[in-house]
Amino acid sequence: MTLAELRAQLQALEHLPESTLVVLAKDAEGNGFSPLCEAEPGMYLADTTYSGEHYLTEEQRQAEDEPDEYSQAPDDAVSAVFLWPTN
Image (cartoon, rainbow, N blue to C red):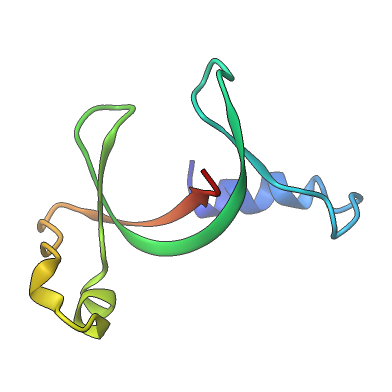
């Protein structure tokens, strides 16, 4: 899903109150759920069609106290928005 596709789906929910909770599924089968905690930009490198690795953007990495603790994103990583669950 792209950010444009997410925005379109969220627009279809505009009728809901702003206080409506956003919850993430643990997996595609719905074997658990957790409220959304944070959304942030980053870099993503797919390992498979359903799994991959998260990297900080170079700007995020340089803003860290010790940027060398974080691996640089590989050249073929793409920009992504990461949605983090509470648990």
